[in-house]
Image 1 (cartoon, one colour):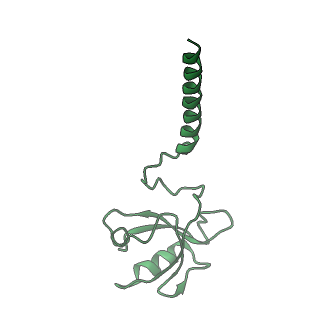
Image 2 (image 1 turned 90 degrees about the vertical axis):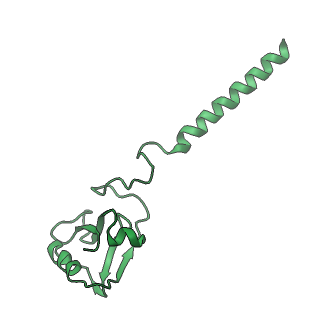
Length: 124
């Protein structure tokens, strides 16, 4: 296989009012993983020049299965995380607060503590 799973289609919309086909998972050590260009959450617009618009999920799966050895994909990169079943991508982010939301207030508190300590020491 090509080494990835898809979601979507006219009969299984992944995103409300959007029947597009999306990459749901890249299989470790599969063709897509080894190539490195395809990412989870990417929208697949065409396979070997065949537009995927308005296809049922099973028809899209069949196109991928019959794509042959040399496969050309036209994709649209996902710019922002989607709400939905696309899983954690394993890029080191926990999915919680951004690191800056923790570091900035922490650094501000540390700077204030140092300033207070220095002012207190000058009075002694």
